[in-house]
Image (cartoon, rainbow, N blue to C red; front, side, top):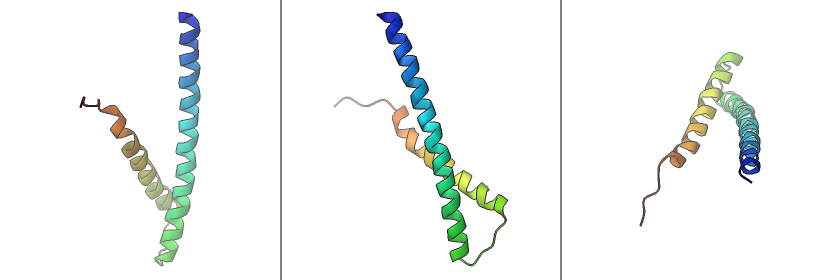
Length: 77
């Protein structure tokens, strides 16, 4: 049973990794759209590279902030 449990854990970790990667790419696309719309509302016309850079920084910060709390051990009450 130990070998089957190990393969199950490996498979679930790989699936979770692919799902998290898909959500990261999806959040980047949504953030690019939001940054582009916000720039046009503000009357700005930035180059596409700056829009992607701003969206990448925002998406990376959101991903890091979302995963930071899970790294700390819980305190016993």
